[in-house]
Amino acid sequence: MNGYVEAGYVVVLGTLSTYGVTLVARERAARRRLGAAPNAVPSQVPAESQELTARGDVSLVKRRDSGETERGTDS
Amino acid sequence: MSTPRTVPPRRAAVMLRALGVTAIVGVAATVWLGLFVTPPDEFMGNLVRLLYVHPPMAWVAFLAYGIASLASLLYLWPRTRAEHFDRLAGASGEVGVVFTGLTLVSGSIWGRPTWGAWWVWDPLLTTTALLFVLYLGYLALRRVPGEFHVRARRSAIGALIAFVDVPIVYFSVEWWRSLHQAPTVLNPTTHKTYVHGSMAWTLLLGFVSFTLVYIWMTAHRYRLAKLQDLEDAEGLEAAIAERRAEAVAG
Amino acid sequence: MLRDAVLVAGKDLRIEIRSRVGLNQIGPFAIAVLLLFGLALGPDRQVLAPASAGLFWVAVLLSTVLAVQRSYAVESADAARDGLRLSGLDPAGIFLGKASAVAAQLLVLEAVLAVGVALLYGARLSGALVLIAACVVGTLGLAAVGTLYGVVASGARVRETLLPLLFLPVVAPVLLAATKAWDEALSGTPGRAGGWLDVLVVFAALYVAIGIAAFGPLLEDA
Image (tube, each protein chain N blue to C red):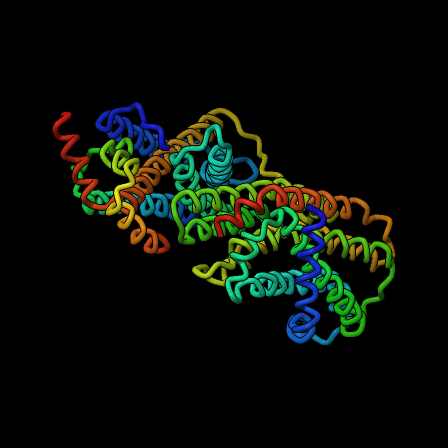
C-alpha cells in the first residue's frame, strides 16, 4: 500500500520541481539573449521603441516582419 | 498598448523570490505533515496521504483554466484589451496543463489500490482528462504563427470555445455515470472522506501551498513570455537601448 | 446575413456535387471506419449491436474532421480565401453557409452510416424519430464547432493535425449525448432520450451563437 503513496509524492514533487527549474532556466536563457542584467525585469515597452513605432520607423518595421516568421517555433 | 506595471523591477523580483520560498516551505510542510505527522485513515489507511496532494492538483488545474479563460475574455473585451492578458492566458495555460496532468496521474495512483483500477470513468476524472486535452489544443493553437494581436485574439477565442465546453462536459459525464450503478462499496464518485483535526489542516495547507506554487510558476512563465515577445518584436538593439536607459535611471 | 449564408452554402454544395469528394472519399472513409471497428471488436453481434450507437457517432465525428478540412480546402485554391474575406459578405453569413453545407453533407453520410450499422452490426433501427432528431441537432453542433475551428486550423502555415486536436475534445459532449440518445432509441426506449436531446440542442445553440459572433474576427486573422 505504501508504495503507492511514495510513488504519488515522488511523481508530483518531481514533476513540479523539474518544471520549475526549467522555467527559471528558460527565463535566464532568454535574458542572456537580450543581454539584460539577471534581476532586471523589463516592466514596460521601452519608450524609445514606442516612439520609433509611432514615427513609423522603417527599419524597425522590417525587423518585426522578419521576427514574425520565427514566431511559430515558440518552445 | 500594454499598460506599464507600477511595481519597479527589482521589487518585483524580490517579491517573486519571497513567494517562491514561501511556496517551497508550504509544500515541504505539507509533505512532512502528510507523510509523517498525520494519522492513517480509518478506512483508507495510508492511502489517505495522497489526498493531501491530489485534490490540490485538481483545484489548481481548474483555477489555472479559469484564469486563462478570464484573461482571454479580458483580452477580447475592447475596454480591457491589453497585451499582458494574452501573456497571462498563455502562462496560466502552460502551468495549468502540468497540474492537470499531475491531477490525472495522482488520481490514478490513488485509484489503483482504492478501486482496483488505474482508471475509472468518474465524472471529475473524466472531465479532467478532457480538460487536459483541451489545454494541449489551446497551447498548440497559441503556437500558430502570426503577429502578436492576431495570435492573441485567435487564442483568446479558442480559449473561450473550450471554456464554455467544460461545464457541458462535466454535466453530461455526470449524468452518464449516474445512469450506471456505482459498483463498489466505496463509491468511486465520492472523493469525500471524514477529514478532521490535523488532517484537515494539512489538506488546507496543501491547497494553499500548491496555489502559491501555481502563482509563482505562472509569474515566471509570464515573464518568460514577455521576454520572448520583447526578443521578437523589438529586436536586440532596442533591448540593449532599454538596458542602458535602466542603468542610467538607477 | 441569411442571404449570404444561402449563397455560401449553395456554392459549397455545388462544388461538392461537381467534385464529389464527399461521395468518393469521405463516404468510403466512414464505411472503412465501420468495418475496422467490426474487425477490432470481433464478429460477435452480441458485442457489436449494443455498441452500434457509439461506433456510429465516432465514425461521424471522424468524418466531420475530414468534411471540415475539405470545406476549407476548396477556398485555398487561387487565393479564394482572400476573395471570401474581401467579398463583402457578412462573416456570420459565411459561417452559417459553410456550416450548413458541412452539416448537409454529414446528414447524407449519416443516412448511409445508419444503414451500414444496421447491416454490419445487426442494429435494429427503432425509434426513428429520435434517431433522426439526434442526427439533425448533433450534426448542427458538430458542423458549428468544426467550421469555427476550421477557419483557424486550415491556414497555410498551420499543420493539418491541429484541427482534430482542437475539434474532437470539444465535441465530446455531442458524442456522449448523441450516443446515449441513439442507445435509448435502439433499445426500444426512445422516450428516455429526451434529456440527451436537450443537451444536443443546448450545445448546438451555444456554438452556432459563438460561431456567428466569433467567425468574423477569426476570418480576418486567418
